[in-house]
Structures are given as structure tokens and as C-alpha cells.
Length: 260
Length: 67
Image (cartoon, rainbow over all chains, first blue to last red; front, side, top):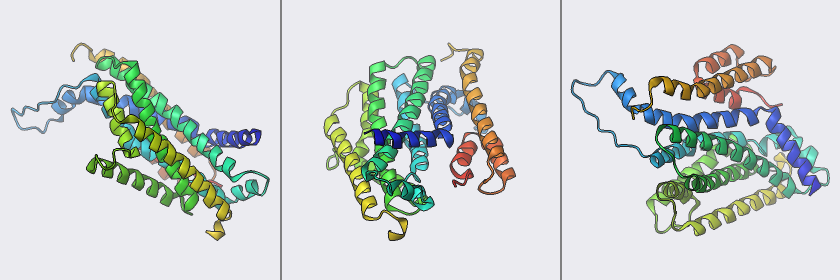
């Protein structure tokens, strides 16, 4: 276990040295806070656009506070997801290409600790960034639209955070399987998009799919409770564990990049 | 909706502007100090200055060669 903490501390140091620990939370805060402000300013932005024909009336639906929070989550679901995939795309493959992983793995270090330390570091930065960003969104929504109950916001953040963690885990898996970091990010984002679309198209058949997490988070915000929660959550956690196991197994089979 | 005056809105937005500038400055400092930039340095400075949030993110993700 102490060995695992050494590896985790190395990942942590890497997050600090590369500046990720600073810029990722800042970007998430800006993302989360800008959505309520843009929603608030939208009537003025449209009025100021100036290229409307005379007498145009645009009926904007009145936004509720929880509706704005759902929009904020959608921001995290697109740009936030992209950033998480981009920062974790090279976690394993870059170290294998540069030879760092070989230096570590010749020592008596378990492959599982090697992968899970990276995974835990990814989860840490995701949790910090998303927590701060969502908190900022919550704060600005409360200031501009009215408060959303803390319980609903916290519940939805847990559900959405699980989805972000799931996609991050898939990125690490692809980073182990594939040689190129860009291909890993592309595959992970593609898999996430495919899962979301399939879940929307086949809601009955895929009622357990992790792609439903975003929908559940929105339902949690709007109505305070999400139905059909536990199958989705348990399937997601099981697939995260399975993805990690697959990554460890693959790394054990092909420790050096030449063997891939 | 009109309960909040534009002045108050400015006070609300001010921390975000500061945060955005901070991100830009960090990106510029990192860019200036790093020896191995992926592509011409001047181009990255322009991207960071004019690309707002996206410009800084692009620099942090793709700008530096990890060695």
C-alpha cells in the first residue's frame, strides 16, 4: 500500500509540474460560471444583435434555476468531457513511449498499482475541477436566478461526476491499449458519444447504460429524485472496475510498446 | 429579471474576468519559460492572447512537448 502511495504521489507531482492542477480547475470554473451568466444575458444579447427585422418578437422560455443548472451540466458534458479526455489521453501511452513506465515496471511494482495510481490521480483532478466548476455554476445560478436546493445539486453532481470518471477511466484504458495519445482521446470520446446516443435512441433496452447518467443527473436537478438510479450506478462502477482490470491485463501482456 | 442592475452584474462577473486573465498570464509565462514549444512561440503567444479560454487550453494541451 505504501508503494501505491509513492506512485500516487508521483502522479500528483506530475499534475503540479505540468500545471494541470491549476489550469483545469480554472477552466472548469469559467465553464460552470459562464453558463448562468450567458442565460441571464440572453435577452439582452439578442436585443443587441441588431440584425433582426423590425418588429421581431422572440419568445424565450422563462428559465428556472434548475433549468439553468441543467444547461451548466450540458456544458460540462461537452467541453468538460473533452478536457478530461485530453488531459488523460497520454497517461499510460506517453510513459511507455518515453520509457518512464519501463523504468518503473522493472522494479518490483505491481502493474495494478501502476495503473490504479494513475487512475486515482485522474479521479482526483476530475473531482476537484468538476466540484469547483459546478460549485461556481451553483453560486451564479443562485445569484442570478434563484437558489437550487443543495441536496438536489449535490446528488446531481455525484451522478454527473460518476459519468466524468467513467469517461476518464475509458480514456486511460484506451491509452493503455493504443500507442497514440490522440487515438486514445478520440476513441474514448467516440465511445462516450456512442453510448449517449444509443441510450437516447433505445431508452428501454439500455435502461442500465452509463450513458443514462447525464439524464439522471438532470432529473435529479429538476425533480429532486431520479428513478432507475441504482442499476445504472452499479453497472457504471462495474464497468469502471472491468476497464481497469482490462488495462492492467493488457499492460501485463505487453509491457513494452514494441510488443504492441 | 431586472432586479439586478448592470452595475451589480459587473461586480458578479469581475472575478471571472480576473480568473480568465490569470489563466492567460499563466499560459504566457509557461510559454515564455518552456524551452521546447510545439511550433513557433510567437504563434502560441498570439493564440493565447486572442483565443480567450480556448486559446489557453489549446496551448496547455498541445503547446508543450513532453520530454
